[in-house]
Image (cartoon, rainbow, N blue to C red; front, side, top):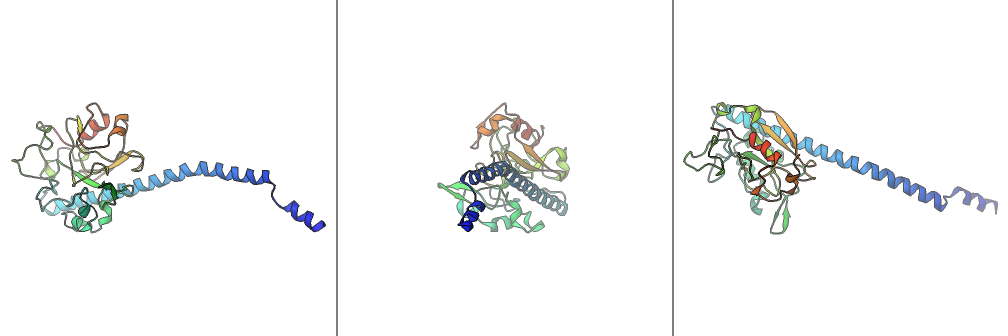
Length: 259
């Protein structure tokens, strides 16, 4: 009898057990957002590092080629910086197309072409994990001067920068960007220099660094830009008109210069 009473005294009452569960639940509620932010920060740091390494490869390329910039125009161009269209399932997962790009010899690591927050592209109703998350400014690198301006809103702007010496302000002009998986296709990121249309758009989602994206600039420095305009959160497809979007205006100013 004495032994049984002693054992019962050592156990938890129902109220005590509920109090412990409530405490654990409260701690979890406090810690989970912190852990989520830590994960986002880690992804952001990795993405930042990836773009910086690609930027170093871009600099080494023109250093070895008489100042000629790696080309961004993808159509029938063996000299493009990277090959592959992320909207074609056979190309979206093909690292061999990355290896055929002109920057790959300067950093032979296909993993640096992919943002850790990129969940993949939806093709035929299925999410396909892609090998590339980054694209190059469409004004970077030479192309046929007989081509019409790209985009067609760029008539009043320098059509492209063929050499590093052509860049008027390398520290103000971006070269590579973290592109949204809903926008990405080839490695040619088209920006409207008049800031009226999102032809392509950078990463714009909570899982991509909490609505921020990375850019690599012509002087070799990298930046993280956080979206500020509420209209940016409404963009979900290419060729979206948002003439007064301050995020688009900022990106446009850093993409090209007037003639």
